[in-house]
Image (cartoon, rainbow, N blue to C red; front, side):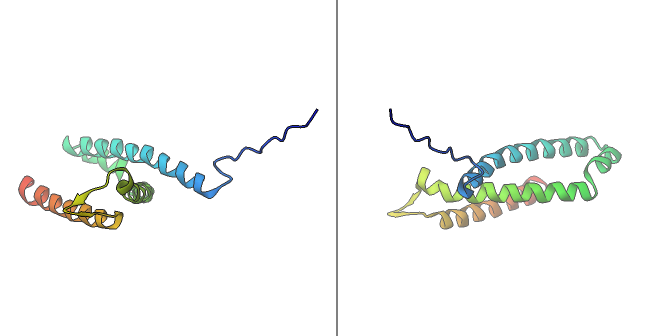
Length: 123
């Protein structure tokens, strides 16, 4: 009777690409936590609970959380825009936009939206 070869299972942490994919998927959870964090900040700011607001959201903890959220948001955003042309190609005329062009369009739309919110909605 022949011995069957048993293949060694490759885990997520044995190959760097699998680790990155796992981190990319985990980043969406971190972004959701940031949304909850931001809503709590708005809640305390809206009801003028400044002492509670300053207690919960000021100092080195807020800076550390913001840096962690920024890192995961960058990972999430960069991988999203690199995969977007493959999942949903956007055509302008006869040209299909690549990922870097989509990032430029996204930045321009974000700047326009910022000015609309800042100058029209807040004033």
